[in-house]
Image (tube, rainbow, N blue to C red; front, side, top):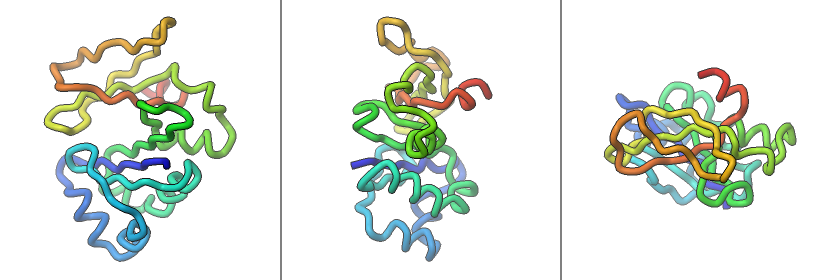
Amino acid sequence: MTRVCFVGAPDVNVQYELLSRETAREALSTYERHTPFENSLAVDTVSLGAAVSLCNDLNWYLVRFVDLTLVREPSVAADEWLSRSLATAIRDGDVQPEETGELLAVYGLESGRPVEPMYVTRRPDGTVPAYDLRPVEETVVVRVTEAEFDAV
């Protein structure tokens, strides 16, 4: 199963915004919903392709109400998320799963919500540099595309 997670903008209740609109509600109606982070809505899809397609179907809403879209594909990384752009690139065959994992956005979790990403490269020994932008309870590691990494 591939999980896709939508994290709402700070001034938006993402569950309300996505579920109060008929088209988005219908697109999400067949999925069991989860809340892995504060102000988030996540669903499990059957594949990476289905996750990317769902994001594309909801794009109008995502642009307006969502700060961060994450995809977790266990066949790529069991304990790390993928950015939506990277998930799309893998689905489209532009990037091979084994080519990912070096370029990362590490988000701090503050009160259960992802905050302020720190862009880093994985160390040669496979470890991820510690998040040091502010004190946080824990972190979330997100694999990103080269274009996302370079845009910082």
